[in-house]
Image 1 (cartoon, helix red, strand yellow):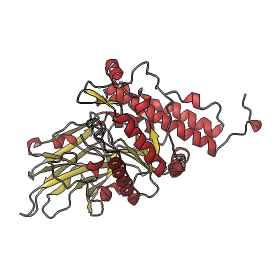
Image 2: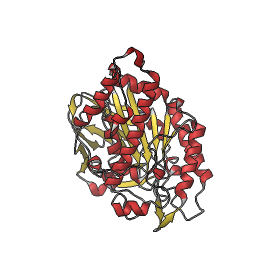
Image 3: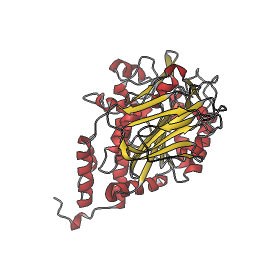
Image 4: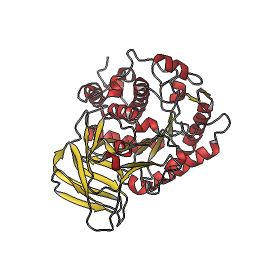
Length: 429
């Protein structure tokens, strides 16, 4: 991403920000999905900006937090990305996390909340590995599968077992976790096995409000490690609903909530969604739900229900943080059963209406990739998978690059509005 085109001249404060934008790219290990960015990268089919149908005033609390974090080294910012298989795969979210945490010194934060998908017997992101001594004893249940049963927490997926001898270890494959505070979210019940944290934590406790077993370590830890124990005969199962790693109380954290096949209505089945979301109250929530809602025969997509579901999800989120701002990611162009799916345009219009009613933003990937029937071209270029629904590593890298650039350009434009430069009093050429 070339930031220089957005910054014609910068005063001392701006020069510091520009230096951070340029230097910080060299101090973070690039995830797989970033390294897959095509070279040269294609130019978006339209102007790559965040669209604000009703203005961006709802984003000012986020802007002020960013400013305090970049220039004063304080504040904790939570960005939460909710979606389906695009999120579960991890390629898109890993790339966005890398870009945003690399924008300036001080923005780097830990991974935050994630789910160990391997335990649910489904695909796991490549950026972290999950090991267990009893994989066959685990069963996965997703909110997106009608025949699966909950209860579910904020992740929309759970892995449960009846084996009290289970051990679990999770480590990052690129950058060490380096956490001090660990949360293991589990369904609260007298019938549930207990959790024993490995690594010699200094303090352990159960947080009934967040429904999580917690541990604190004075020494930074690279591996999430715990095992189960049975303390009385009534305990006969364990239901894992997510992991959260934390280090310092400052930085930008990018949390990923996604399960294969999830639609807007899927997360509304998650009865402990709000309780667990309070563990990382979002300053900005990025919604990537819609591709599964729109995966229907022509004319079968119910736009009214789609918008109502989103209204409910936003209401739930505001109950956790009333100041949360929202970004909608439009669907990529797609196929339905091997044929062109025209609902991408309908989803775009729905999201623009939702953004106007809620002071939200829209990042219009649908038209940036070329709009209707562009999927065939992306498949030929190797940027999209042949199923006509998912992206390849290169495609997710492009989407992440464009979204991060649009967010950064908005932030810098807002920065210029808040801190205008008086060229008559400067030595600018």
